[in-house]
Length: 329
Ligand code: HEM
Ligand SMILES: *[C@@H]1O[C@H](CO)[C@@H](O)[C@H](O)[C@H]1NC(C)=O
Ligand SMILES: *[C@@H]1O[C@H](CO)[C@@H](O)[C@H](O)[C@H]1NC(C)=O
Ligand SMILES: *[C@@H]1O[C@H](CO)[C@@H](O)[C@H](O)[C@H]1NC(C)=O
Ligand SMILES: *[C@@H]1O[C@H](CO)[C@@H](O)[C@H](O)[C@H]1NC(C)=O
Ligand SMILES: *[C@@H]1O[C@H](CO)[C@@H](O)[C@H](O)[C@H]1NC(C)=O
Image (cartoon, rainbow, N blue to C red):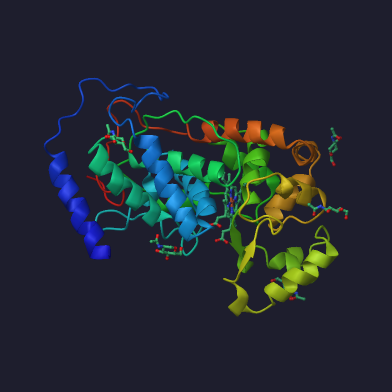
């Protein structure tokens, strides 16, 4: 399987040598970017995401998160997809990604299908952006058209991945600063955190809340009592439970809805960084309105996703169209 993919991709690379770069490349993202060069693009991405979800219901969440981790580190440039090599230290082993980020094979498979349909045309970062949007849609969330034309980066940065990704243990001010550094605001923090309506988290990402919050020797007081007891059973106070998984939204962990926000109002957020949104008078009113108005959440989520997918994009003649998403051409 592994060998097969490598073989197919090197074959694709050969074919790409026959293609010249197009005479004009737009320097702005737009909805029609691949309309003539790859008319079946969205169909192919959707098919890839649909079959991946049929095989693994968690993968929708994983693809959405992978796109976030791409865009927050040197912009949306598919840097997260690069494997380590002798000349490049990738981001896959950065703390927020190692044994945590997933979905790489799904992007490989979609890329393979696209190299057959329209070789050397679609960037890996556009594939990831489209896959994240499809993942939300197939999970019952909003649909939005995705502006396209991003190009793939030539580098990756493990340091930027470690420094720029927000951690679940940080204060809201720190997290907000990391968003602001990318051109996003406090509203984007709240609405994009709503992505935690799907997917899973490992116990170590919230365990201090259960036993020794802020070195108090006690659980986090802002955690619903009955949820606390349940979580203490799932994640006992021993290192061997660190990688045990728990749903971010246990009511509907594969359905994209606004129950995440209802749970924050109920003191039932899983991560400290989730629950903090309810503990600050700048963000709590937004949490409450998203908990009441699912359509408002869907609309604002769409808008913030398009904003996030614009961070530091390479267009025009910068970057490249990678042939294999795991290596620079
Ligand atoms: C606001 C700051 C954020 C923090 C501190 C944060 C932190 C985390 C953590 C700790 C996990 C669990 C990882 C693990 O246990 O391996 C997680 C999972 C996840 N995050 Fe976030 N996140 C944030 C924002 C976002 C954003 C903006 C998105 C997407 C728009 C997102 C989407 C997800 C998804 C979908 C999962 C589940 C992934 C899966 O099941 O594979 N998160 N996040
Ligand atoms: C698009 O896909 C359809 C089948 O799904 C195929 O018949 C058609 O040839 C494809 N078009 C292009 C331009 O690849
Ligand atoms: C199905 O999902 C599992 C778990 O994520 C993964 O290991 C496996 O490679 C997937 N199989 C296919 C054919 O995608
Ligand atoms: C809580 O954590 C602090 C710092 O790691 C430690 O000094 C303290 O002993 C812990 N308390 C309990 C009850 O585990
Ligand atoms: C929030 O708490 C209220 C009152 O305890 C309960 O009726 C409701 O079902 C809870 N909602 C969620 C999403 O857990
Ligand atoms: C928000 O809380 C801070 C500190 O708790 C307080 O000083 C401020 O007046 C509050 N602002 C609003 C709008 O309630």
